Image (cartoon, rainbow, N blue to C red; front, side, top):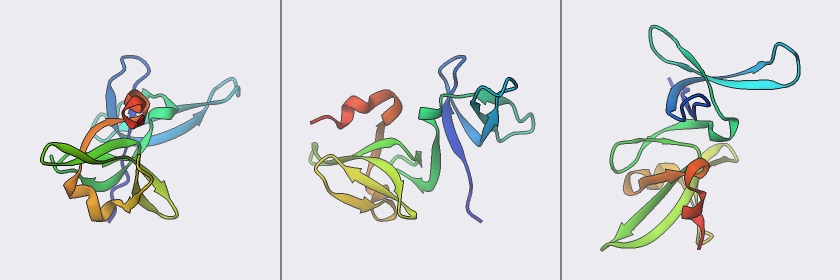
Length: 128
């Protein structure tokens, strides 16, 4: 069975947390709050920035790190950057949209790329 896992950056201490994503209406009905509930016996819940929430793709990078939606990845050959892009979900699948305009299905390239950041904290890595 596919693992439904998300991560997000906590509002209270800026740490990243993984678990289940929950969107909950505020008690005063003024909008919504976004939480990650940790996948452990305690099930602690943490308020997170919505912009930081990304779904786990089910794949790992060349360093065996879990790849999440919004991660920025790159591959290099001989020390030169070959491709750099962001992980996105579109048209029913996860892909890598590269800064040079190319795009790849993530399942074909994940093991050859390394995570170097994410769009929430490192959007400047995608600039020319």
